[in-house]
Length: 319
Image 1 (tube, rainbow, N blue to C red):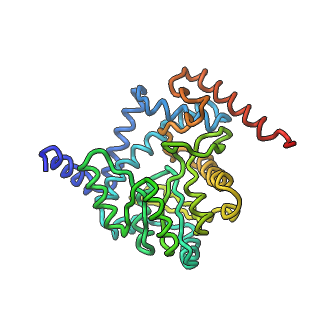
Image 2: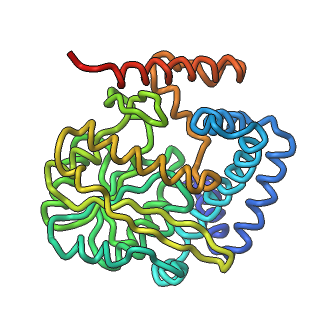
Image 3: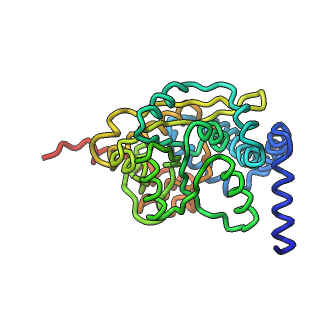
C-alpha cells in the first residue's frame, strides 16, 4: 500500500467520522465562497440548466435557485462521506420521517422484486441503509478512479447488504436475477448513457436517455417506486416513497422512460433548489452538443428553437 493511498484512505475515514452538522457547516462555507467568486464552471453549468429547465422564471429567481442548489449539492457531497462512515444503525436513525412507507412494504410483499428509481436529488445515499434492512439489494457500481476512495465506498456499501455489480451487460444480468428472486435494485435514471440511449423528452427537449429502468420493470414486472430524501434541520432526513404510474408496466421502454422523466420534472418543479444541477444533461441532443460553451443568450435561443421544433413535431397530426 503506497503512502498516498494510505493517507487518502485515512483522511476519508477521518472526514466521515465527523458529526453531520460539521459536514453541513463546512459545506455551507465552501458553497458560499464558490457563489461569491462566481467563476466556477460548475456553477455556470448549474445556472444554465436551471434557465433551460425553468424558462418561465425570472433571472432573479434563476440566480436565487442556482445559489441554493449549489449550496445543497455541495452539502450532499460532504454528507455522502458522513453517511458512508456511519453505521447502518446510525444512518437509519437519521431517517426521521418516511412518507409512503407502506407503499414500499406492499411492493416488497408481492415478491416480484422492486426497482427503486432515485434521481440526483438531495442526499440519496442516506436512504440505502433503511432499505437494506428489509431487502437484499444489487446495485450497479462504477469504480472510482482513486483506489483509496474506491475501497472506502466499497466497504461502506458492503455494510448495507448490497451486492455491487459492474455497469455493463453482466451487471444488468445480475440485476435481472435479483429482481426475479424478489430482491431490490436502485437506479439513478437522470443521466446520459455512454453509448446510444433512447431520445426522450426532458423539459420539452429530446435527450438521449437511459431506458434501463423501464426495460427492467417491463421485463420482470418488478414494482417501480420513486424515492428521494430531503435534509431537515435536525441532523437528519425526511424520505419520500411514491408509486410509479401503472402505465409503466405496459407499452414501450420509451413510454416508460417518459413516465419516469415526468416524475423527475414534477419533483424539480416542487423543489428546484434540491436537485443536483451541475450535470451537463442538456448536451445529450445533437443540436445542443456545444450548448455549455456558448454565450448564455445564444445557448438559450438555441434551446428555445429545439424546444419549439419538438413541440411542433409532437403535436402534428399523424397521417
